[in-house]
Length: 203
Image 1 (cartoon, rainbow, N blue to C red):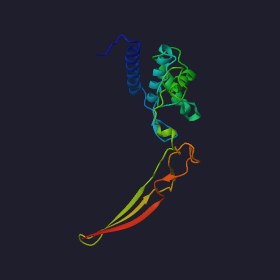
Image 2 (image 1 turned 180 degrees about the vertical axis):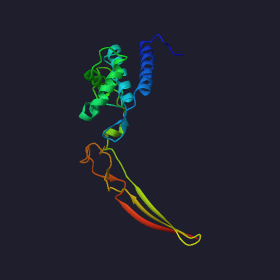
Image 3 (image 1 turned 90 degrees about the vertical axis):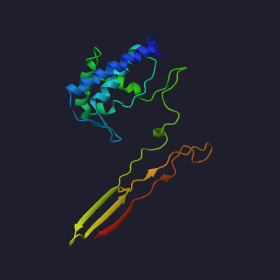
Image 4 (image 1 turned 120 degrees about the horizontal axis):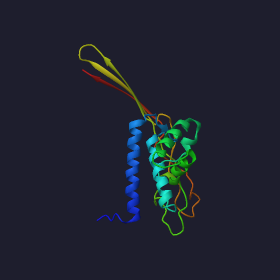
């Protein structure tokens, strides 16, 4: 049974409750475009604000403990992120007194890579694909053209491009300790651009 007298449990309940209220408030009062991170994934004001709020609560209650967070403040610190940073700061200020733009960014960055304290467990998983090989992105394209012929006759032409941009997809780093390839990327995965044309005729 959950013991609500444990400080960590009390903190978790408080953090979840306040973060949920913040997200609902942002959803009801603020509609804005999402920022795009370097991996092209969108991130909203609610994402940043909720992580900053949890970071501030952790800073106050368990200042020595690390935080596992998805976002960092890099996108907010850029010129194009100024408006979003103001909106995040405003949202967090409704729950944390005296929150400035700098403190909001610092709370968000509690989730960045950092060394754990002496005798403390780190937050990095034992197997983290992001630290083992570059991010992979593949773009495929299919173009079709349907032709209505006489009667019930019909023709369809398809142009298919696999790995349209011919982007190399690198494999992970070498893990054989002592070999010349250890810690280096020496191979690729996947395939280079493949183009094929097909035609289908129905009658």
